[in-house]
Amino acid sequence: QVQLVESGGGLVQPGGSLRLSCAASRSISSIVSMGWYRQTPGNQRNLVATITSGGESNYADSVNGRFTISRDDAKNTLYLQMNSLKPEDTAVYYCNFVQVGWSGRIDFWGQGTQVTVSS
Image 1 (tube, one colour):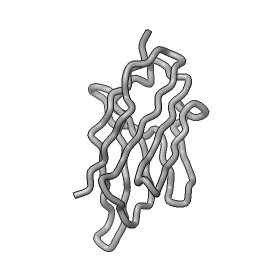
Image 2 (tube, one colour):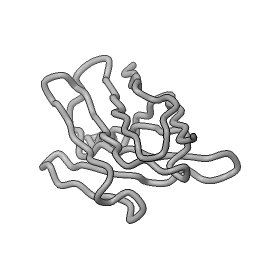
Image 3 (tube, helix red, strand yellow):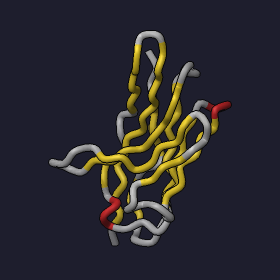
Image 4 (cartoon, one colour):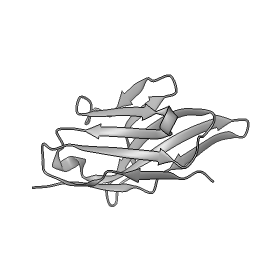
């Protein structure tokens, strides 16, 4: 069973930065994309950023230009660099790996890490 372990969340002041990490417990074959999502209480989980196996990235309009998604395949790790943080970025952040193989699509999720932006 593959586990995704997130780290790097915490409390930061507006304008500050955080770097989230998501490490897979082992290498996962046939990963087509990785991404970060966030969720606030009572709301659905929303996409923040994704990166494909080919390295193409995509961002939500609200974070474009402030957040950067990256990956280190040798370490089986996904990152999210968050700069110029705003109070509205406060949420639980989840990482996601998408595997597509002979059995179809499988989504792997991290346990979530809290990011709080407040003065």
